[in-house]
Image (cartoon, rainbow, N blue to C red):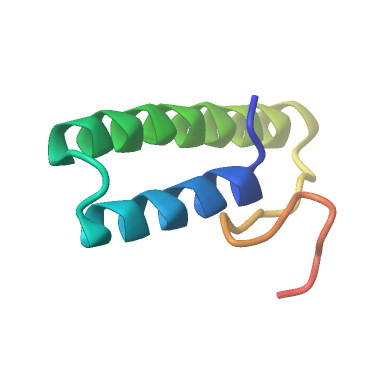
Length: 70
């Protein structure tokens, strides 16, 4: 599974490609939908960790899991 940083990078590149007209809007929509599913899977994993351990720290989608800087 992709990391949150990888998804963020991919979506930034996709945005630029749509903006420049080099990617069809329908294709971009499907890629964004898939990315949303990756993010939802990550969110569910975090919720599972919180539920099972009751001590997992919140993770921002702009940070990697190992980075605790807020």
